[in-house]
Amino acid sequence: SLSRLVERLELRGLVRRSPATDDGRGVVVTLTDEGAREQRAIGRRHVEQIHRLVGGALDADELATLRRLTDTLRARQSTIP
Image (cartoon, rainbow, N blue to C red):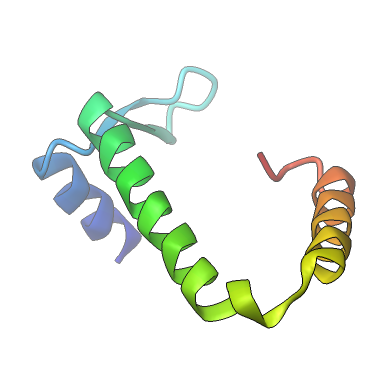
């Protein structure tokens, strides 16, 4: 099902597939410029929804604590961009 999803994204011009240079069996999937624009737009909507649903639930100190905790989690997970 993942291959079909990637194929649909490729047909829409959102991703590009190319052979993996280090593994002949693999495929590298990258965002196209249009895909990157779409990803940013989706990301903005996601942030707006989080702000709408969670934003007012925490005061400034609680938000600062949450930020420190998520920064710590990200720092300890080297694979998270």
